[in-house]
Length: 167
Image (tube, rainbow, N blue to C red; front, side, top):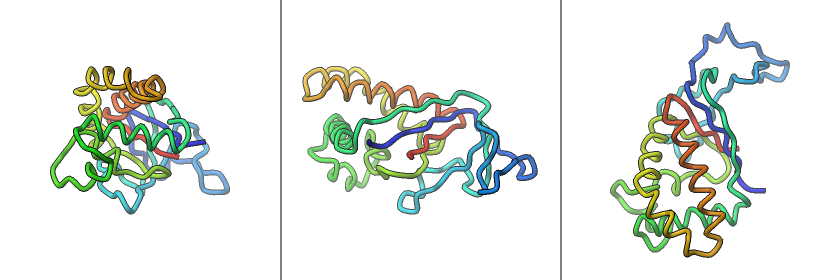
């Protein structure tokens, strides 16, 4: 099994006194969460406080990206759509580029906060037609087109004071 993504929007920061915790320290209420900042990618969580609990008063959704090999292939295709020969070329490019924050992010754990989600949503939206054509002609294109649409939906939700948590 590959990476799984939990998407939240309209997160409301909670006062610590409002949060009921279980004996193991996790929130009891289903729509309450805290978000982990991957230390290798600290900018990605921008807009959220890692020392706080948040209540999701908006939408919540989840999706998967297939197995890790399929997800890596999807990220490689995003690099191609961005005009790079490899994901490494995109990551090492010193200027802003489409999809860079997603390609250059943990495959296993971390959080994308609302600021980076908004930037990535615009990347996905602006390249929607190009990606549709590209995935129509590449190996496993149907699967990757579904992943692309899932990311569009997830980022649309997360850009509204939300988050995407990779678990």
